Image (cartoon, rainbow, N blue to C red; front, top):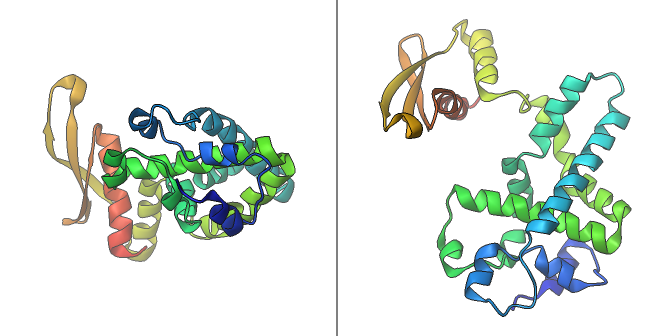
Length: 229
């Protein structure tokens, strides 16, 4: 069993009920291999933590940006609490090494791990809320997540990738990106697309997805990385 007191020290938290902390790290797959484990999986804690996280971030934005519209605040909040951002913070905090996963999930380092980490971060917030109260969870979220907000605003990360690519390419090159389906396959109910994004006639990046829009967004993301915009 992992030593969760090390995590408490790392996070500067002391739980009254350490089982709540441990449960935040129990993935459903772990219980398939350890059916006699004394705790359940973390999905209910994640459900609670998601609501606490949304309230804390919303409250912070409302209080600190009185001149911003609801639409702007909604976009900022979405960028701050999306799975990619939460998983990144979870990694920085070293939460990954404490996850309780099945052997198969431990080996899988694909996109699924990103969602597991994001859910784990929300479950941890739920556990902090239940054990230490709202103020403690608010302090934790401000310290580890809300600190990312200035970077998100400054770099325009709250805008969708297609909008960001269009703004950058028009400003830097005077060119509007175009998108073209390069490949598509599969039956109507399970289509798959590969889309290329072009600047003039030059192919910059390709994206894959189960819809044209999803593939275009993926291509725009890759193009922004390739161009270092």
